[in-house]
Image 1 (cartoon, rainbow, N blue to C red):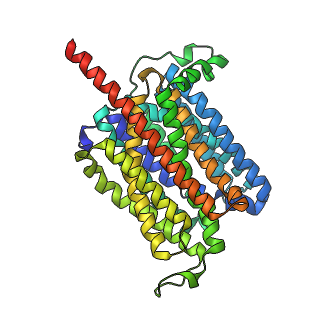
Image 2: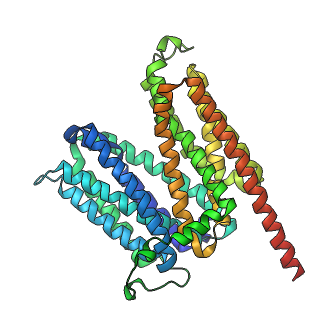
Image 3: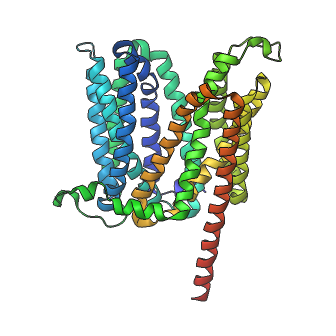
Length: 421
């Protein structure tokens, strides 16, 4: 599989993903600190939670609208609104005018734009790709996403404190370039209604019937549960696991003489290891996966991912933590792009926006479980939390095995019918 053989839409999507992901990561990871300084922890928490809720809601709306009126139209609307939010955020941090409140309000509005954009963009990706191309495409997008996060996060860590305005200008430019590329270089697949000639009703925004039908799809419902469980496992790293390392890891317990690290430093080390390994291994496994049994690879990947995070959540030994994180990353790099590619096999062509919106919500629920892990940890024990990670991973693996069996059975039945014809 070669990059130059992919559809033009996919190449444009890779460029826009890199630009927006890199530029937003110079700003967004630091917004909680930025807001708390001026508005306090409670107000910041409420505003950021509101952003997540609005993202949920507009993801559902995007699914219905993109299936009815087309992916490109919704992407252009979302990107135009996103550009406006970035412009206002930049003006609110300029040398001539400063307002933390306005910045945070439009940061929350940005969650609406992202909720509108993502399901439509992911549906466009499926529209533009062939089944056999998807493992390669999702592996490449996975790598691009991680590289952009690493670059953007590094730039933000260095310049955010003193050069917020200039980083926001960079964000405005990146968003503008992304919008231009979407308008002039992306093409629509399929026939859709003309949104400009129709008076929109509530049913156009949220087609509950289409969502009910999607949730009646048993294979897809299993897939949503797998997504929730798998996302929740990694989410524990920045929640319960981070707190455990800070509270319980004593440098005297480390079985080595080279380091004298506390829990917070070890957490930073693990996150750095995770990012670097994902970037490097994604390139390696993109080519490796072309020649292996993908059905076996994804299940082995899930098991490695689960066992890796289980030991990271429980071990007090520095070297075991490092090795376990490496095992988890290998499992992640193998399994996650394949999981996304199989999603394309489950989703009907005429309801991609709806299905992808539900999958995005499942990912958010996984993140929510990760945050609830903090509270569960305060009431229970490390062993309880670690075993819950282990159980979640093995349930996800079993469910994914069932999904794959059903998908391959359907594929075989289709092949038999084609041969008979």
